[in-house]
Image (cartoon, rainbow, N blue to C red):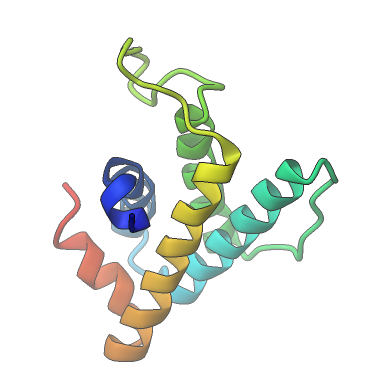
Length: 131
């Protein structure tokens, strides 16, 4: 089963965090979102392999996206309450092994839309679908 079919709701949550940052700062580029996604993939892959994750420093914009998406990741992993503070009994936490492919799928989408529509191609595209 494709990641986007099995984890559609997770992808929506992750993209919401990215778009929310973009709506607050229109100077954010797809590159910033990609850098943040790369850093998150490295972080959670390192965690799954029980090693410390070290990464290149992020720009301010990429760092803000990283933190926003990391908070969603931590919620979806069941480690922190939902961003709105509520908890739903039906929310089954993800495993890190399930989360990493979601982050990689976001990264793949960023690459595709950037190549197709330019420096903010992904951000402009996904903004149309995220409320």
